[in-house]
Amino acid sequence: MITRRNLLSQTALSAALVSISGLAARAEETAGRPGFFAAKNIAEAGYVYGLPIVMNYAVLYEFFIDKTSSQYKGPFNEIHSAANVFTYKDTAVVTPNSDTPYSMLGMDLRAEPIVISVPAIEKERYYSVQLVDGNTYNFGYIGTRATGPEAGDYLVVGPDWQGDKPQGIGKIFRSTTQFAVAIFRTQLFNPADIDNVRKIQALYRAQPLSAFLHQPAPPAAPALDFPKIDKELAKQNFFDYLDFALQFAPAAENEKEIRAQLAQIGVGPGKTFRFKELSLEKKLETVIGLKQGKDKVDAAVETAGTKINGWNISAPFGDAAHFNGDWLLRAAAAQAGIYGNNAEEAMYPMTRNAVSGEIIDAGAHAYTLTFPAGDLPPVNAFWSVTMYDSKTQLLIKNPIDRYLINSPMLPGMKKNPDGSVTIYIQHASPGPDKESNWLPAPDGPVYLVMRLYWPKKNPPSILPAGKGDWKPPGVVKV
Image 1 (cartoon, rainbow, N blue to C red):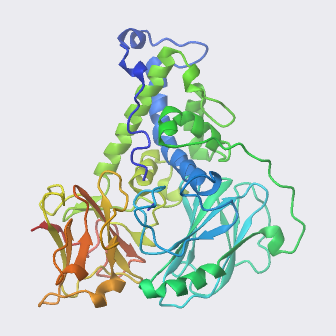
Image 2: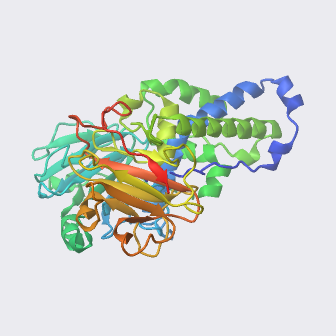
Image 3: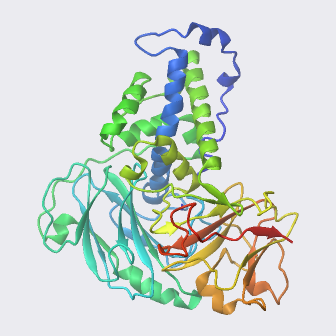
């Protein structure tokens, strides 16, 4: 799950301090624009609808466009592999997975489709290729669970592509937008296994369909002037970025209503919002609407899922059919952890609270998480528990460079006399005799994410989300 929780955390515009009572009372329509309250409501709905789209654009910009960014991977349509797992230095996405070295592929599908080729991978090693479009829909999977460990070639096409499946292609995946991302996750068993992961990553391949078919390439897509984006610019120019991104996202049937509403306040593909040029009244409509939209998403994140032993268990991620026009669910999913997997691929119990309900504050207390004997997370692949700073949801710097504890580490961990396994969650070392089981925590509030890759469907199982018969144990204050 790669969240910019504070993407629009403060709309610190001085205009918001101006009294609006007189302006609101008039609620007058000018030049066909809705009145004050109607426009404010559209801006609110626009934030909820557009947040995942703008968040996705921000990641694309850092990963594949801005060569000066510390998070830059490389150009579109080329696979870029990292022969290491994420650390505290990786800040482009929130709640990053540090279990599996990543390979990233940004896809520009405007000119022609892209063929993704994967090698045969041993059955014991989990891998997945998650396909995510600009709407943050998971529109397909390649990998151990979805397509098996065999080698294969797969075609990723844009929303307007027409054609038959070419010979040699195993499956066609259709993006709802002209830009998309492929996220490759390759399981690392232990630090000594990194060279094996590198060899696999070197065999992942992406190429245009014309190259795969040994045919002449079609004309290149027009060059684009991608607008610079960062956290501050996103706060100030949210709808400008939504304008830009929507031109590459043809409206589905269930988007036509919200798109029509946004057009009434000057937002949409081919439009230029230009917040700074708006009148004071229109600025106030926008600022208040955006703030109320943000509050709505924040509340949805906090109340989503089912609380079990302090953990929040939900399954918010999926394809277009999964969301079915529920823009609030889509926004909450992106904010909780953009690019999260479908439930059948991975489940993500997460918590900031001990089993007692109080906030986990490692600056004040030490905590434990104990899995009873024979009751480890039920998975077909592997599981992990990852530590994040509560405020930023980023990995934390720590003296032993350990960001998680996962199932491949179990042979090196100590078991209790009854066979249970205890993880020590605290800021300072629990001592040499317990350090094998230590998950270093920040000097303050904690955010924990448990990951179950390829969760088992038969009991005991965490599925269906919130109703499964396997329940994660609670975090206990020492």
